[in-house]
Length: 247
Image 1: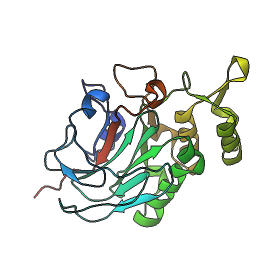
Image 2: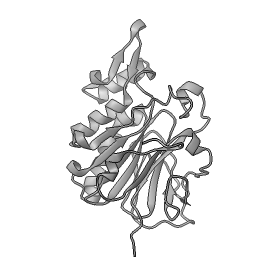
Image 3: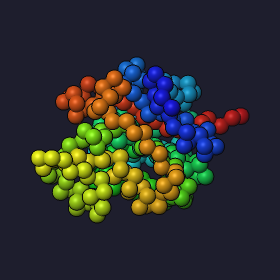
Image 4: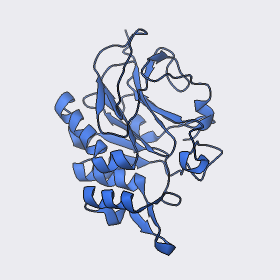
């Protein structure tokens, strides 16, 4: 569903674990004040008692695992494009402005992840690598994992050049499934479909993958877009976290 500032999906609620999540819009981002690498309490869209953590993103495949409670004095210096936690009351967040925000949740092992995937990270395999981390570090069974793919540059607008296509062809054997050829030798990349194809190839059940089919380039009223604006005017924040334990 869409509110005035954030987008949520039924997929996580159906898991029965009361996981908190949101995909942010440009309206939501204005008043967040979320600093990179510094936990913050009570941002809009999250529980007032929850910590929210966002880190520096470098278009890579490394994941930061948060496996302890956070404090206001914590500082996370470094670059990661996935954040994973099993800590109640901790929301892990990513920032995007055309790249894909991906939220993951394993309701059996009670672990969540937030992933930032541009074309570089997607082609390099950040999605399967994060799923593999859930398995190896937290004992997740991939068949139980739920994934939601958030708003990003859509295939309608996301034109790519030959260097991008070369990397894609080398790193993804089914590249033709996610590329749409246009007139004049131009090609458009379906970044959301690339992520979905990779998740399914790793073993995530198609019924547990949902997609918010909104293009950040098309919808200027809702989203910042680096491609449309030619500079970083702002980023959307998307996050997921387990609720605080009662008692």
